[in-house]
Image (cartoon, rainbow, N blue to C red; front, top):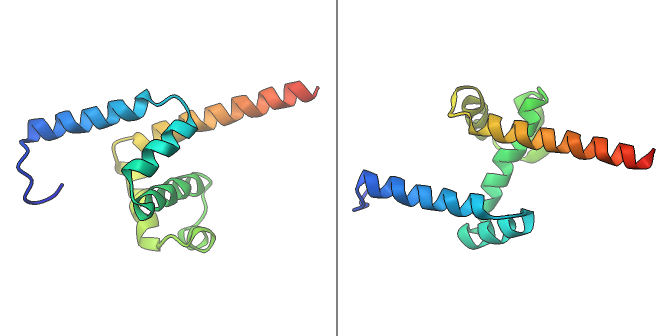
Length: 115
């Protein structure tokens, strides 16, 4: 949060809730992409993408240095993502689990179509 912000904590939470509601109202990846490209600078969006990519590699058990070599993300950022993955609010884990389940379901459906 910006240090000179005049919003009360209650107003800030309400505004965050409105943002999160806007995000979950989006219906597909194309809508999300458009929204985030409008919302974020290219550097901000890249930082989010980098962190999400790091989550997947950490879940695979790759060492920090190898993740850095694959992504170019700093070891400090990788450590921060790892800390929030284990001791954060559970958001990375929830999203990763859901996306992984969707991917497995799609892979099974593709395999069945080929049979």
